[in-house]
Image 1: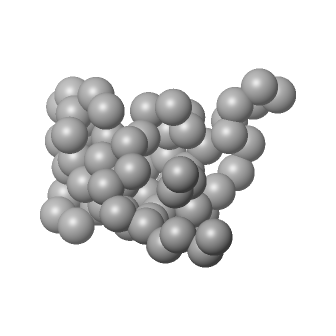
Image 2: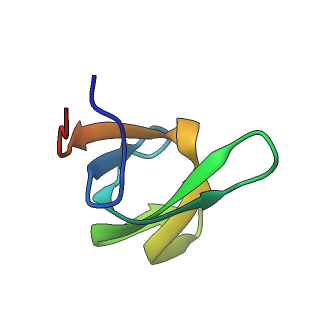
Image 3: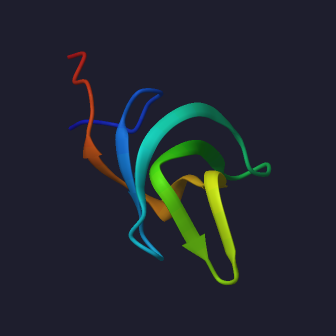
Length: 68
């Protein structure tokens, strides 16, 4: 099973924006998070952004390296 890692192509589960994971960090004591650079600017509500950081469970793997 592949995991989301830096360099993975991911899709945001809430708005469908696709981008590349550029950083991994901690959201809080229970959750990790990913910072993603989108292929094209993504719209979140009234905001358009090129980068977005969100909790790990809000991203779905589209493509990534399988190092097993």
